[in-house]
Image (cartoon, rainbow, N blue to C red):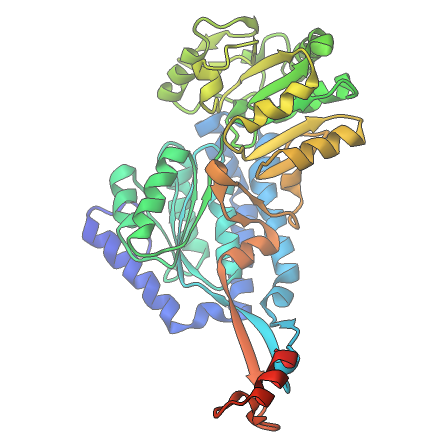
Length: 464
């Protein structure tokens, strides 16, 4: 039942209906079946890794190492972690039972939600579609997958591979663009998992509301990077460059702008420039390790951010090849477009402050970001940032290394998203944690039954 490129709306409706029927049959709830599907997904990655790496390079210019670390290897690690812990996650979770409900026992029983729609993103077109699928399979759900049409080679490849490795009745791929996504959103799902921008996130949430369908929204925002005077500047610069220019800056958790005190700003700027040269050479355009911009529309969007800005490093571009040099902008106006919109590209504004104490109010004046980074050797300042700011995820003294820990939930807050996943948090997100209380027929105390009296009330007050 492969759904590659459906030709009409009724076909999409029939596909979704078929997947719902599969879930209703009940076999996706079986532990052994879930593990088998996860192992098949693992096999697909291992057997077709060359094809997957090639698609990532064609769509985004990703080198093999970067593509493996951030896409294929990331998902393989997630699969292995999930298989290792799945039996435990599926077990009833014991809860205490109050004296008024004794004798009895209480527990929470995870059960699948049903049929999940997963809408992937173009910047990590494999990871951001397949990692949610791992959670969906683990939780016992069936799923309809919608890869991004912008990363067209990966979309086509997944539409070919998924039916060959996974159960065709439980998991289908729908290719297409706005029309197909719109039609999918008209269908009845039990959960919608969307990764992308805020504007489309609102559309997804609005469509889901018509069916009272719960959603997970993994969005983005302007993730700040605060550099305190006590930080090791050389290591800080290396880690900022690594996390900012991976995938040519097209990462939802990439540092979007840097806040640094003027007393060390020149030192930091020079260190960042040096690390860019160390990583990508004097001519990044010839580097095999540096990616490209996804398409012309996004290229022109990024070019527009540089108008009337103080570019202190980089800025060279080649729209024909999608090359956009790592670029530093110093002290842009806070009301300029580059500081109002998520950059999602290889431009890094650096804002100098008279005092690092200005950083926290500046961060808090904006929408809550998906990630926040603070580089400091001061425990007091670290705690100040953690206690006085809000972000979906925080990393102290590094880039998005928190993504490598499957025991850490990943998700946004406020405008940067809702709901989290990875590891058990993904299993729980795509499960219904059903409350169960079981009571005995023995010792049926009549205190709770009418007729009532002052004596019964006095006893009930003590035990409830």
